[in-house]
Amino acid sequence: MTEQHAQRRVELVEWHRAGPGIRAIRETVFIHEQGVPVDLEWDGLDSSCAHVLAWNDCGEAIGTARMQPNGTIGRMAVLKVWRGRGVGRALLQTLLDLAVRQGLPRVTLSAQTHAIGFYERAGFHMVGEPFMDAGIPHRKMEKELMAPPRD
Picture (tube, one colour):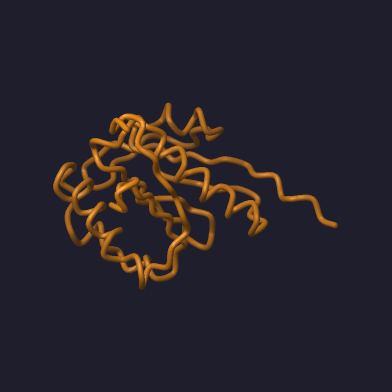
């Protein structure tokens, strides 16, 4: 099997168990690649968030994202060699499915401007003006959700 067609899986995980894998990805992507200061990356919110983690077919962690209880999605990071292969889309969809199950009316996120198209393809739309976060331009985005039908 070529790496291009390698299998991956995405699951909801618990921070206290999956923290090392999540930390490694976020440190690589945000701190080392993008220059986000360490104190901004580790904001103390992880223990209260829902986390998703993606693994390749060798069991290596390759992507992660989180959602706060209020429906704010963030910290989406995919290792460089795995970008453009549907990992981010799978991470995002797993969190959107969770938000629907929880009955959240909408989800929000702060998108780096280069990723706006990715989120628009997932049904998000921009709200507000551009802003800087950790020296990187962002736009707030949101998506309205439909609650599952009640029996």
